[in-house]
Length: 488
Image 1 (tube, rainbow, N blue to C red):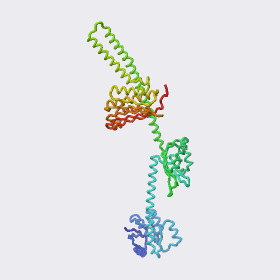
Image 2: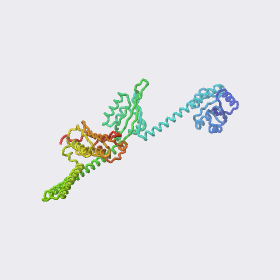
Image 3: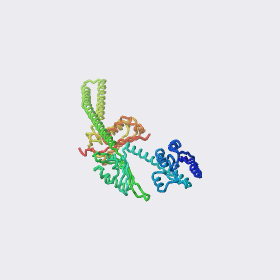
Image 4: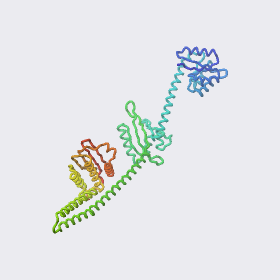
């Protein structure tokens, strides 16, 4: 690689001396000679030298003027003055003004070492500038990213007790960008009073363990605005493993918090609406059940009694007529039983009469009798009156599960277990059938399953259904029992 040297010199003899001296170096050089300002400007622009060697004094131009022009056009190019008249005091002033170096004409033997040093310093300066520009660009990108994400960073020096905040950290706390230095005490002054003890405990835990810390809290800005913050911090250790500082970030999540609260509000409204609709549906079922039982049931009972009366009032009964009357009596009995079953399915009165556990056990026995599938009922729950929606929803979930088993499981045994602890009630329904497809559960396409999960959610609980191929299905309902009545 050739080093391009621009020589500003009018004396041909001096030019030959410079070339002769430079030729002694092991480095390859190429030269461009200029003798005035016009040629110098053109050389800077077109030749683009790696280094400039300039005479201190020329007939129509001078080295210091050339240096000023160089600073405008090519400020990073090294500039060495060559003169036979520069005094020591003047040389110091020249160097202070930015000239890279100078060489006396009677000591040209020092020129190569000074060129080498100047080029090396220029390369180092270039690398530093590249690194500096890269750092500045990274800082700009970080600042933009922090502003977009509402994340501010900070660094706390334990020796000084001062934390340096980024611009975005200042914005989050509602401070001017110049107020970016804070003590731990001044930071605490922003913490919401209701969150202060929590924050101090978190900090104490972190100091004890020297582990990274993360927690959410609120701050109160000077204008009274409340912000929700997620804080993350990490200790900086020295070579001996002792903490010398703390650094971290503070993220403003106020907007997300508002959205979450709005979603929670909407979910509560939807839950209340769903609960209301469930209540209306149960009331309608109760009304229909009552109408069927009281109206149709009584009418059919009366009809059965009339048929029986007609049968026994015949003096000379005809066998065909008697057979027909018996058939009508049997049909009436079947209709009455059907009405009772439909009425019971619509609104199981047994819950109100005998309690939830008795209703669940009756449902299991009814399932076993009708489906011919053994259904064991195991309960360790003390019978008592639960809140009305609590009981009917558990009953409906058992009812729907048993219906699904009878339709799809091909089971030979069903076990229903009810247990409780101080805060929760657990209903577990296990069958030994072919096993439900877990993928279909995840997709939530079955209306029955959707309805069961909605009922569980309304009561603040969870419903899980897991199937194993050819080994059966387990339906597990967990409900909080804080809404129960202890007695009735």
